[in-house]
Image (tube, rainbow, N blue to C red):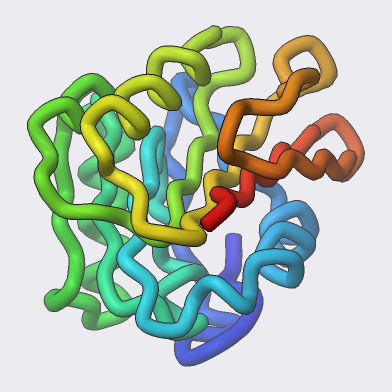
Length: 179
């Protein structure tokens, strides 16, 4: 895998070994970031199900201020740490090897939330409710949720505008928080 654009453009990063993670394809990542580029400068980003860190690292490469990575898979977190080290990224990152429910304990607010769970895991509603109930989203925040055709968001959520884009097998839902 490679970083598509920004400070770390064309740098290669590793994907975790095994079948427990499904990295976003370079083309899908590029398409997502072309849509969300406006949100990246100085953004505080939450990358849940971060795996290799490809989405969060891409955000940092394109100007995000800070990324908080969350993944419960030990091998994925090791790979993420290797990728950050290979790019000399030691500041403005936090890594939690934990279940996504750890966000219940977070106090800071985020401008951008990147969700790329295993496609079979039906967790969006739970994560969305935590983000809303714990007031973890800044004004005009954006949630990006990658899924398959069976799990993409089909309804609007109060206080958000929903746009859906299809990139091959991936369906990406963009939830824009209304101010």
